Structures are given as C-alpha cells and as structure tokens.
Image (cartoon, rainbow, N blue to C red; front, top):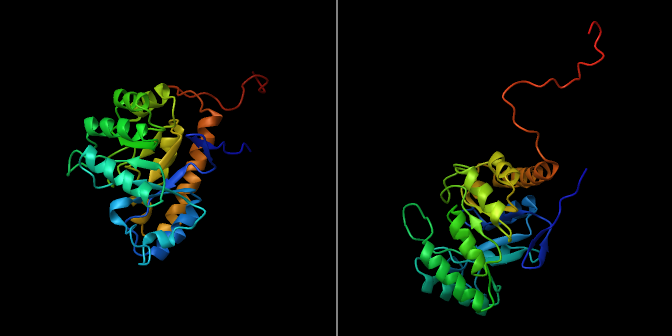
Length: 259
C-alpha cells in the first residue's frame, strides 16, 4: 500500500495531514487523549484564550504533549491591528512565529473580514511570520493572500462549528488548482466523511476542532478523523474512476459461454 506523503508548509514537513484544536473539550485530560488518538502533529491554540504571560498557573498548554507543534491563532480578533498584536504577543511569549491568522468580520457567521485579513497578512509576512490565514472559500482572495506571502491558505468548508460539511466543493477545487502553497480546509467538518471528502477534493490537510471536541466520544471521533484524512489522501493520490451516467460491467464480456 502506498504510504502517505508528507505535508510541507514553509519548508517544514509533517507526516499527519490532520490539524486539531484545543477548545470546547470537557476537560484538559480528554483533550490530551483526543490529540493522541488523532495522530496530529500540529495543534492550534487561541492566544487570547490562554494565559501565556504567567506560566506558573495551570493552562491548557500544560496538557499539550511537547511532541506537538503549537500553531497560535488569533481567534476572537475583529480588526487587522488586533490580530497583528495578538500574533506578536504569541511570538514574544515563545509560542511560535507561525500564526493561524483569523480576522473575523461578522459576529453571527464568523466569516472573515477579507480586507483586514489581507492587510494583516502583508504586515506579518514582512515581520517574518509564517502566516496561515483562515479565509472564505474565495479563489480570488486566496490568490491575493498567496501573493502577499501566506505560507498556506485555509478556506472554510462551511461556517465555523456548523458541522455542515463541504458546502462548495467546486470553489475548493478551483482554489487547489490555482494554489502554489498548501490548501488546508478549515471549519465546517462535522464527521469523518466530511474530512474524507475534503481530502479527496485535493486539500492538502484538514483543520478541525468542534467536530472532535463536541462529539459524544471525542477520543473515538479523533481516531475516526485520523483514518478519514488518511483514506481521503490515499484515494486522491490513487485517482478515482470517471463518473458515468450508465452502468459499466465490472467483468469483461469477452469469452463468456454462448457469446
């Protein structure tokens, strides 16, 4: 069987193409077990929701295995300036110079503010951040973010936490077809089949949080997502058969008795 090829972002290889979050778990212990079951190497942490200034106090960071690569994110930021300050704070605290960049433009849908996102990306790239922007599934905006220096683009599959699955498969295909950087589907996954669909469309990775943390059994769901992402990647590389309107016999008719 073919082995999974590594995901490479900004020159750094990752063997897992599943990225997981740290929010909404019933306890830090369950979170840690889910992380282990997921097989993920990269874990995203909301900078504004953890105490990174006083490490003497208990924090979810204490429950993240050192083998995991921490990806700070700017969740909860509603302006470019706010997101830029948050990214700088994470780097100054020693978390990382990588950032999952979120600049929210609408409180109800949690859709990104396109203009602010592009502005923040340009600033942070100039400051030597590795920027992974969370973006609406807009091929034009993804191209602009890439031109601005984003190390990857992270289009949503559906609104954050909605569990609706991939809502616009064609846009994701176009984004992937045009991209010269990794395309990571971020947000909207509800169950394992959604993750598989994203990978079969050609996504380089899938990032999720609520689908695992909100499941009845987060540890089991984390393992299911691990298998789903691996299966989707292998299927994409294997190449699916063409879709046909009519049936095609799976066994050849040549040589049949009486024919």
